[in-house]
Image (cartoon, rainbow, N blue to C red; front, side, top):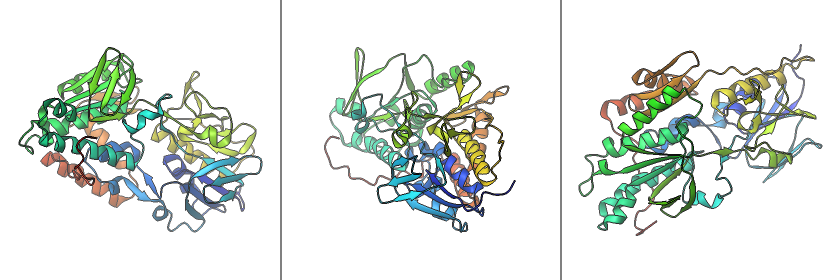
Length: 418
């Protein structure tokens, strides 16, 4: 087998999947164009730590151009793709168009509000750095405004935080906010007691972390309650208004509302084809679009069969495996390639200081050991030695001092009511 000759490969999106493809094609005979609407690769599993003031944006994001600075065959374009013409092998963006011989679509997924997109303004989700910084601003500003507020009802709303969705993102956010209120800020204010903050986690199902071992779910719920998080199960949000979450027979006034209840890919719109329930597109065993073998789809955008009635989960390790597979397939094409085979490493979630859960299939553990394991795994997978070292030192300092080092509010607080 010889390397693919003089092929132009276009990669849309430089998340975990797109990055893995591009790395496989470094110094190959392919010319590669990466198109991403951001100029950076984001280590998304730690995004909630930016939102809760543990880390700064530069700790978990790296300029894409810098990552491929030494790869002469790779070009980076910051632009947004608007349409993919499969018949003409053409990618159209806001500012131009690009021909391809091989196309890799790794656009990821966005927050979905299940037909209520108007909720987004009042309940932002957590998918990129701008989301994280907005949420950080709202959390920290809520305490500052509560400190100055004489109206008890209004103060209570400022000190109420609602997280919607009991998956890993919701659990991590609720736990981190609880630690901010109950520990980090406990001595910083004079007029309010941050320990009296109300943190609610709303989940439509009967438990948090659906898909984890039931015993780990039970531990997570107990750990959250120990942190002071109020768990609300089997209740669906009926409406979200400014500073207000409406459930059946209940209305919660909250200045800070965070959405973590679901994501959906828009890849089908770009390709003008039928989508699966979560917006992803079904691919063949080689991660290609049926009838278009020059188009690969990976990551959250791909619907990949796994273990009969299951699909490959939309998590970072899965996207990286798919990216490496596609990159190798493009670099060294074969007349009889082996189908993609997903190797599930396990599920992890952190709840708070010394509280985490790890489900590796046959091996399951929780508590402080799981917390250290979670930290080690995330440090291990960070790109670049310097960044990993910075994050490790930041975590160690935060662990010793129990402070949130990135507690900076950039916006103004002079409006009376958000």
